[in-house]
Length: 350
Image (tube, rainbow, N blue to C red; front, side, top):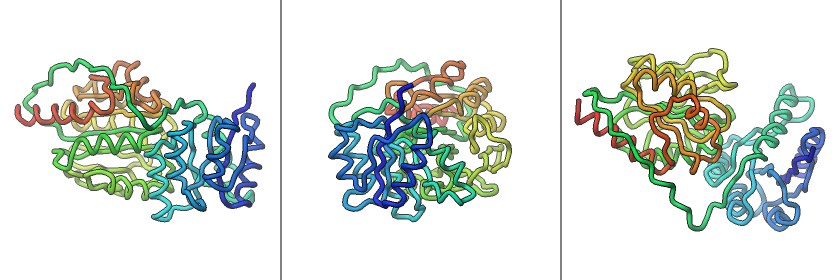
């Protein structure tokens, strides 16, 4: 079997050699090259033709965000951000790299004596192998417009919506900025969000999202009464659950290997609100959210999956479509306008 070629971009010689050791132990992977700067990576990119890139964020000269931008315009390649820092500045760079086209962010494995070493090393190698299969696209130039999707009539039930649930994973940060920006600050009901991200980066993601969209972003740690104009995320390693009058977190088992799980959130919304809720499953690898979207759909809620034409990874949306739990499948730019149309129609009919 052909091995997956990994380009390591890491300025610390010690850490670079450590990553080489970890990746070299995995029979699926091989080192295409290991360099200490983004500039050097760009110089050799076409020559070494990596299948996936392990990208540090804090680099001499060009940082990881700028490097991601350049790579995604010059030779689009799957990028996994590997960062040791959860400091504010580095987290902002990390999240902007995800928005620019990097696929996911992982913690750097600590030394081999660390209790977390084996798990972090295995996760790094597995994510590099998985992400190498993602077909990334160039991030500049003319974008072919998605085909127009005929939309069904807006349902008129006389009762307004009470909550929007959104689930996203690989490729999610960029999609979320576009979706939330399109909804606008006057969006009339709360938004509950599950975005799959390494737990140590949660606070940085929440801060970055708040600075990138017109909503306040709250991490739910116990229970909270949801309000319009606010996006709610679960605290680390907890499910986000909706009840008729509040949001809370729970420590149930992972679902689809995720905690928080989008399926858990959407199923709780189906139970709490039935047809008075909307659910969206955006780009992502795997199946999380699909069963929950089906449950919400069956209870009369309005459900949308991102169309294959715009999804970075058409995994979770495809599963939702396959299960029959989708009211509409729309390209990303069409989702916010449709949600606003539905919300306005329900409000007028109420």
